[in-house]
Length: 153
Image 1 (spheres, one colour):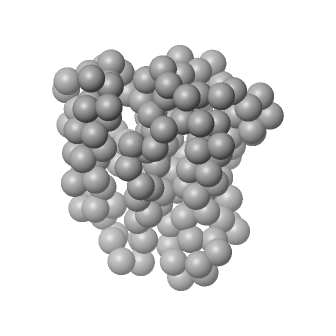
Image 2: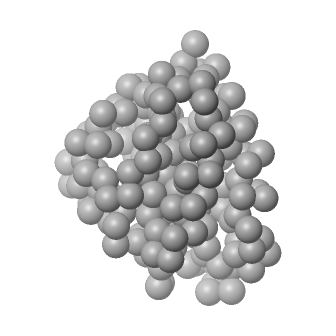
């Protein structure tokens, strides 16, 4: 892994805070965090590694600041076979299973359709169980980084 782009979808700041905390832990490669990303931002990682960290809104929807990127990827449909990715999805299971972590599920499915290579299974964090998402995300992120670095070697 030569660089990592973290693309964040957030409404109340929880996903932003998680992204910043995780990015600070990675010192071996350059990390850039995108809160209002464009397709060009994302395509700069077409041969490297991306991490999508997103909360879920309303009926399982993608937050407004990440939705334009999702729509652009869906519309342009750039195949990304050299890209590696991971998804951390924040949600609340009390809203129902079909809505729980819906934004992350949608991004995971789209990146798979674009032939991007999943580094490891999506992490769904339930706010009803884990008030502090870092408790769960920390170990997952360490494994994600190790696996992405091995894949890039």
